[in-house]
Image (cartoon, rainbow, N blue to C red):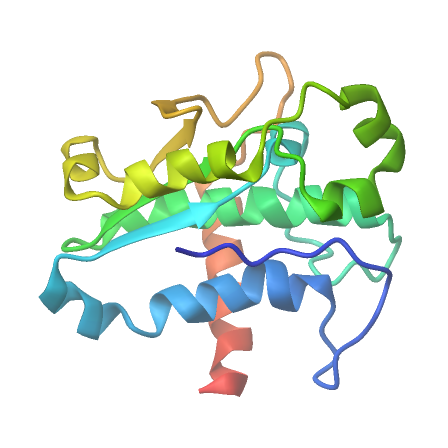
Length: 189
């Protein structure tokens, strides 16, 4: 289960990477690295995402957020990147991939980073246990009955784009993301 993700201030790691290192590059390395070993053990890779990706189109021109930084937008963009990857990985046979969002869960990060949103949603946020429910259902063997590469929300498959939001990307844009990630990942192998 991949659930890395942070929404922090503009910071560089010692490798010159930013939030992107945790939210996207880390996911890429963590997922692609063990694939040869995982294929031998009926693996199921699950990635936890966020509804924030629904309002972002993939942008491969500024993965490090060098031109402008807005933590909320960067987080949403990183989650869109994760979704694109999660839809590409099922092309690798032998591993069942799916990704999901746990719903509007009352977690400390929501209060810390989105205090106004948290206040508006108070009383409508679900407990962490309910958010975990979809994750747990997706790791059960019965989950592999569904096609690999689907996005789940509240235990049902759901679209990854809002109608009229113009968040779809071309295969060339998606391939560019993978090429950039593979190049960056080589530094850590």
